[in-house]
Length: 247
Image (cartoon, rainbow, N blue to C red; front, side, top):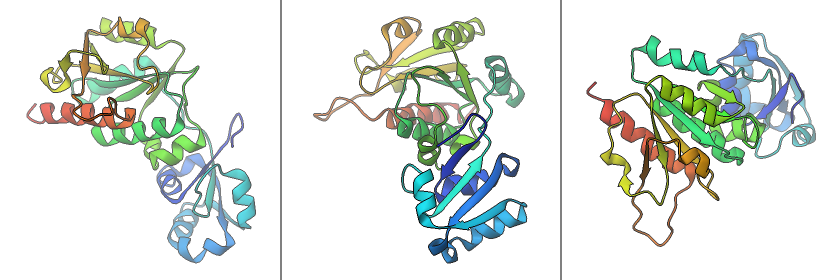
């Protein structure tokens, strides 16, 4: 549930992570029956001068859209950054660029889980298209276990524009595609790069795939010929970390 300027997130981990950015939190609601189990969260909120309200669980049920664990928080939506700001991040960190471009992933669970992987793997920014993408909805926050607070997000009108802009900055574009010929671990990920992944149902759109400098696949030995997109992102992302370990 959300409004133009406020959003509700739910679940213990997302709310605990939000408390690390206390200026973003407006109020926290705790179900009466869960107070004893959530004392640590309540104490942390009070320490940060965040209002805590004890309410009936039915109130939380109306606001949340999934497993809430007895806690809901009203937050200001996370601010996205511009593509130019994203390009400055690896420069400031003195690291080769590592961006993730997600092509029309509409499942909030996947969007959230991908964000969790991106945070763990040190991706400099996630770039996604405003239309036909899951974006920052409450269920994505829940699936990310709070990681969405810590990743940089670039919301853009057209990811093809973003890809062209990255290429102008000598960032190589890799596409993850099941029908590709080259295995992903045989590529050089030590150079500045961006990885493009598509939705499970349709994969990367052909118009986007045509902009990739190299298309790579994950080898599959089983009878199921594809992985969940967040699992695929994890395999690619940690291969990047492995190759850059000695830089």
